[in-house]
Image (tube, rainbow, N blue to C red; front, side):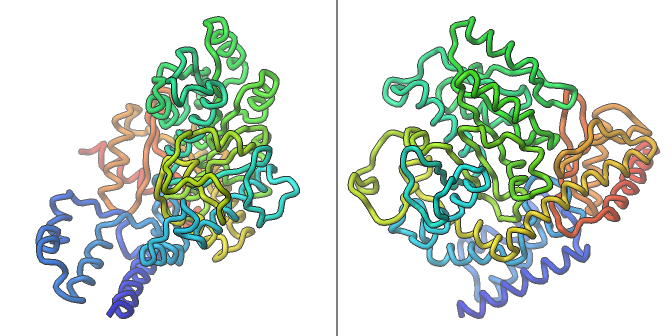
Length: 477
């Protein structure tokens, strides 16, 4: 029965992908949760269980109709990967065998895949040195890293390590009151959240001024640093956006790295989205100098077609990784040498899924060169869309894109921020396109994130016409 059900669910998923790619489904058919709960018969199925194979498959069919169809070429929404068609296979394997990879003896294959992919990422950073890809012995003086469930946990982990480096007793004695973190005013909210979780408070974040596109102004960094020193503060780390979530633009990483080296400061790069440029010989120019970082986070579930969640935290020196969390659980942390790689002592998560397996799997399906070409394609598509919008009346774009993200406005029938919001929600409710919006320097923009390998400039031309048509209807109503 198990084999038959898996085969039939596989057929339903195949149909889901085929119909989505052919635009035979809505981009998003968003219903109220009460409607979905009723359609899925959640109460009845919870109480009685599935009433046989047909009932189980009926649930899957209904569930798939109430999803966001990321494989639809008109999906241009959040920074969530459009995964490879077969990237769910490792999830099926893990869901069946349930081998957590944080403790090696509980998941040797998953732990090995994680160690291998960490070494691959370290090599991309230029940090692996002459070590072999199969060298899984992390030690002080060598670079290291681990995989976590998402960028927020990853940033928290990196900041905990930075705190340990400057305040070695903080784990046991609590935080000193003079620690601050410096970064662009547009830094991701997970940085402020991490500071509060660590007990430093969001006031410990010292913002550096940004330009009209929310990119850090390098000339303001020395001023902010000098002020923190004059105020008797110590800089725990300096954070760079690579790239900003809202705009896809990169902070001046190379210059920030030089500044941190000059002043002996911990340089952390939040590369959740943009570190994927390391895979591309063409696009890596946007992250020049990233190797000067002391720590980096890198989401695989954004640009590299890996299902959520899968984020790397990389350290130039293993001693920093080892210092982040300083406690023991005798049943899992061993003083003597053990076989394999235990990531558990170095992460917030005691149990985590086999993240390295699904990261490796996606690359094994495509090959590294194809993933790099996909990244280049989406970056170029954003540039092509920028050129298209600049040829259109009543559209404005505030910047030339550096990645696959572009913000823009349509102002023929209204320049108010609410008009952009209404446009977005109306378009979504029409079900043909899915896009987002964001606020930049106090102004509301429409926003596309181009992550679907099947999306072309023709689909973006169709989006332009959809916006025009929708705006005209709104103006008449």
